Image (cartoon, rainbow, N blue to C red; front, side, top):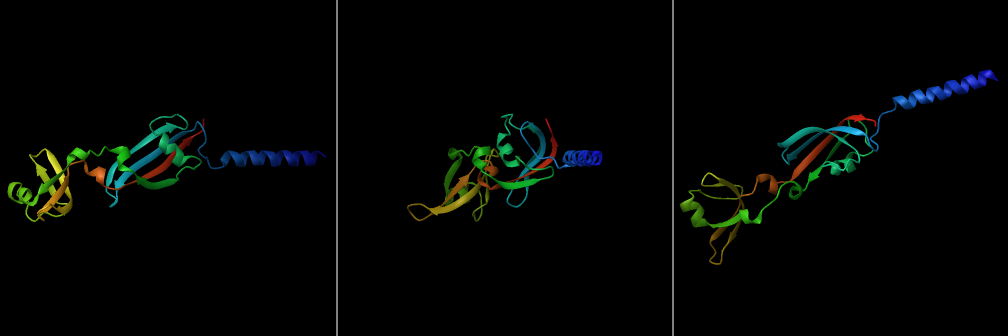
Length: 165
């Protein structure tokens, strides 16, 4: 009889020890450390940082909570970022120029899409499209917004540490 009790007790303690060594999973109120980076489609890194946040804290990283919830340490997540959520694209910084204006006044030879345009060393833009005006002359649409606003961005999130609370 005592052998059965001892065997049940040893089995129970073994299960408790096994549960204590089980990999940690992110749960409510845990403190999570992550490495975050986002990059252009050619893998050029735009920004990267390491932060620590508490699940259900409703901070500025609340959108990341939905991604990492129930994951384990060293888990990695990738996806795309809507540039409109991060950077403000201003429509008043998209201007059109006639071919004569670019070639004769700004001295840009053979302008084409993705050609850089500088105005007074202050505004730096890129030709985004080429169209024709009513007289069939080339007209160039130049975007002077930050390049991050018109490029697709990808993110990589890696869970580096989980502290149970």
